[in-house]
Image (cartoon, rainbow, N blue to C red; front, side):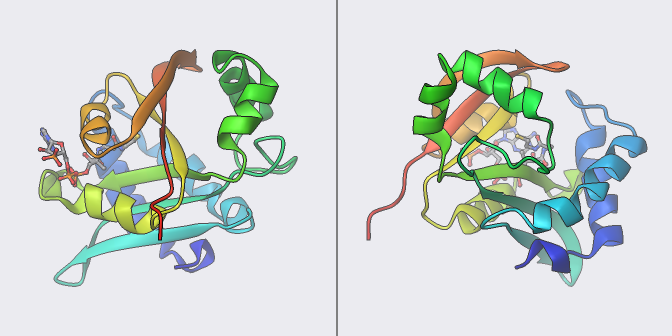
Length: 176
Ligand SMILES: CC(C)(COP(=O)(O)OP(=O)(O)OC[C@H]1O[C@@H](n2cnc3c(N)ncnc32)[C@H](O)[C@@H]1OP(=O)(O)O)[C@@H](O)C(=O)NCCC(=O)NCCS
């Protein structure tokens, strides 16, 4: 679905609950900041989102966009310094461009804690990426990291980004 069509208030509830858990332990103000980025995300190249519902109730979501030349748009949702850090970690801006430009950047993935461990996160990620090549950042401390590896994502590099130690993972396009 289009990012512009996301039901902001319902998403904010689920997002807050998912990221309130360790290792994130985020407060509600971080949700407000994340939700405020959605209009900018909606206009990124190839932006799309998926939602998961159970009995009509929103239980999870995911979204992202296709990485443009330069790794981010001038007016993109995240600061240039994030992508500069990724470039340094990958051995330089050229290497980062070769690896990431054209790949789908998974920027958010979350499932309400009451519904985690039931396969919803994997299904969201599968539908969002939809067989294309993609990349994402995962906190090293996140329980999601070993799951990404089991699901076929390849860890490329670990580095410190802002407040967290993270890993950058990629997945290749599924032929056909
Ligand atoms: C990461 C997240 C989206 C995964 O969603 P999910 O619905 O729990 O994922 P799934 O049920 O599809 O898969 C979870 C995997 O972790 C494993 N797991 C182990 N302990 C678990 C736990 N306490 N809770 C959930 N999954 C657990 C499951 O066995 C599964 O692995 P498998 O597919 O190899 O069997 C969800 O846990 C979440 O929202 N976490 C908080 C936010 C977050 O970390 N987002 C990702 C940022 S990179």
